[in-house]
Length: 134
Image (cartoon, rainbow, N blue to C red):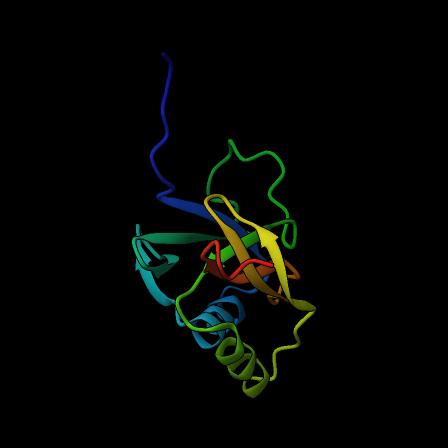
């Protein structure tokens, strides 16, 4: 049968400026910064986290191509997209695309896109019920 993956525990972002990244994710997306393992940092949300690696201080010698700005992440929220847009504008964060419909892992999504400080593409989405999709 092989391996069956149930969920994502964490992912790792390589960043240029740890403090700037933490402030962005706290302010824009309400994530919580927590330290762990001798001065390392992670951003917690729901039951997941994003571990942060500074580009100029590699943590793991096994990582071959850690590059700031190479990620494309999608975060689901219960906050209605019009409220997300209002919040992002209030925080001075430019919306790159959206709102627009996309295809998610389990449903259609209504999404907006922004860039984080390293220019990772960040999708913020509401899952649409079948009647909401057009």
